[in-house]
Amino acid sequence: MARIVFAPALQRHVVCPPAEAAGSSVREVLEGALSANPRARGYILDDQGALRKHMVIFIDGRLIRDRSGLSDGVEAGTHIYVMQSLSGG
Image (cartoon, rainbow, N blue to C red; front, side, top):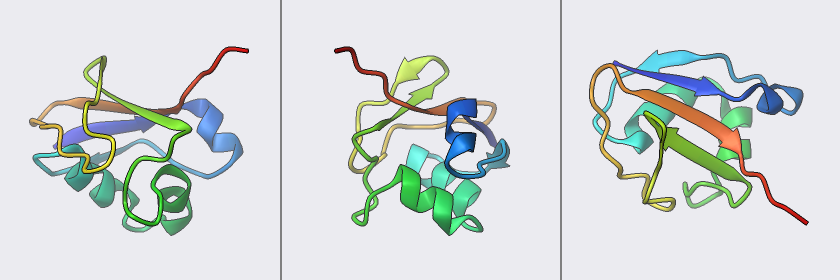
């Protein structure tokens, strides 16, 4: 199982408690973690299932590459961190 943690800043908008979920890709783990939380799913993913532009996901400290398919590989014990992206002005 992979461990998925949602940044505290997300908690101001939707409840996203840390979770553990099985899967071999970011999509599978994320879907497992959010299956009972459609509001959080809609905040993080768009209607096509791609990562929203204001969100970023890290796997063991590395930014994911596939924002639309979320196909980046995940192994047991992987830590996934979901947060809002930061932008400068």
